[in-house]
Image 1 (cartoon, rainbow over the protein chains, first blue to last red):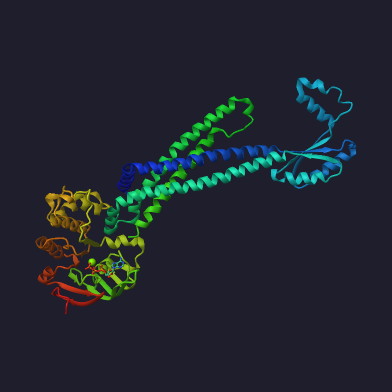
Image 2: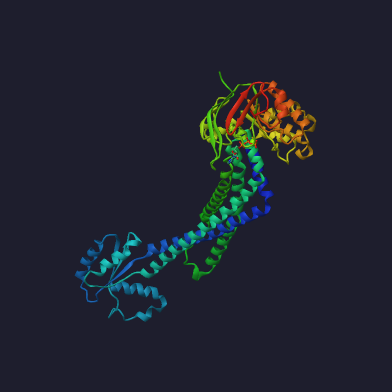
Length: 297
Length: 231
Ligand SMILES: Nc1ncnc2c1ncn2[C@@H]1O[C@H](COP(=O)(O)OP(=O)(O)OP(=O)(O)O)[C@@H](O)[C@H]1O
Ligand SMILES: [Mg+2]
C-alpha cells in the first residue's frame, strides 16, 4: 500500500469517529466496561492462581506414629512411605525433636513446656512431601493403610476450598467477559454501520469504478481499531493504578502481608498488552461484521 | 477478431423467479455505438448490469474486453470495472464533493498517482464542457451539467467501453440532445458506447446500431436502425 493511501485511510477512519460522536461514545463505553471487568477478573484470577500455587507447594502430610512404637519399626515404615507413587521426600521427626521445635516456637514462654521431657506427649512423626499437589489425597490414603500409623493430617480442606474458588472465579469471569464482549462487538458493529449507511453512495461509486475491497474496508478497519484502543485506555489506567494502590495498602499492613500478591511488574505490562489486544480484536471484529455485507455489490 | 462485448446464450433468472433474459446472443465491436431499446421490464437494465457484474448470469457466457465475466473471482472484479465506465439516469454524484472532487474521486480510489490525477481531471472536464464549473457543488448545477460530471467521472480512468442506462431519462429534450452530442464526441475518440434508452426521437435521428430486447430476448438487431419495436 502506498503511504499516501494509508494516510487517506487513517484520515477517513478518524473522521468517522469524530463525526459519529455519540455512537462512538457508546461503543467506546461498551468496550471500556467490558475490558474493565475483564481486567479485574484477570488480575483476581492471576493472583488467586498464584496464591493457590504457593499454598499447594507448601502442602505436606504429617504422619503420626503410634506412641508405643519401637525404634526398630520406624525405618520399615519410612521405606513403605517412600515406595508410594508421587512421594518426593520423607523426613522423620522424633518426639524429642518435635518437642524442641515446639519450644523454639514458644520462645519466651518455653518454660511452660518444662518437664515434658520425662513424659513426652508428642508422637513421632514423618513429614511427607509430594511431587505434585494433586497426588496428596492419594498418598495420604495409602499412608493410612500402614500399620502403626495413627493419624494423617494435611490441609485438605484449605486446598480444596481454594481450588473451588479459583474455578468459580474463572467460570464467572469467562461468562461475564464473553457476554460483554459480544455486547461491545455489537455496539461497534452498529456504530460502523451508521458510518457505512452515511457513506453508502460513496462505497457504491468506489465499487463501480473498480476500487478494491481492501481499499474500501481499510477506513472501517481503522475506525474499529481506534474504537478498541480508545476503549482500553481507561481500564488500563484504572487497573494498573488501582492495583498499585492495593499493593501499597497490603504491604503497610503486616497482618495481611502474608498474602503474597503478584508484584506490579510485569503484571501491569501483561494486563495492558492483553487489554489493548482484546480491545482491538473486538473493534476489528465489529467493524468487519458490518462491512462484510456491504461489499457484496 | 476480438469483440468488445460478446454474449453467448445468456440467461438471467432473478431469485424471485422472474426470467429477465432468455438466451441473449450478441457481439459488439470495438468502437461501436449501440442503442438498446425495448418496452419497460424487457430486461435492458439487466442486460447492462451483467456486463459489469452487478448481477450474475444464470446460464451462458459473457466476455467484456477480453474478461470472462462470469469466471472472475471476487478480487478480480475491480480489474474488470476499471475497463468500464457506467452512467445512470440519476447521475449518482457525491453531494458533498464539488465537480472536480467528484471526478478525481474515481481516480483516487483506484490509487492513481497524484500527478496523473492533476493532469487528467481538467482534461476530462474540458471535454464535457465544465472546465469553468470545477468548484461548483452538484446541487448548484442543472441536471444536464450533473450528467456531464457523471460522464466525466466515467471517462476519467480511460475505460474501453461506456455503458449508460437511460442517461437522458431525467433531462428535457434539448439537454438530452446536448448530452447525446457529447456521447458522439466520446465515441468518435474511440470509446465503445452501449446505451439503454427510451428516447425514440434520438434513436431515430442518430441512425446507429439498435438492439431491441423484448421479454428478455433480442427481437431485432439493425445497423442504422430506428426505435420502433412494435412490429
Ligand atoms: N433485482 C431484481 N429482482 C427481481 N426481479 C428483478 C430485479 N431487477 C429486475 N427485475 C425484473 O426483471 C425484469 C427486467 O427488468 P429490467 O430492469 O432489466 O427491465 P428494463 O428493460 O430495464 O425496464 P425499464 O425500461 O423500465 O428500465 C422485470 O420484470 C423486473 O421486474
Ligand atoms: Mg431499466
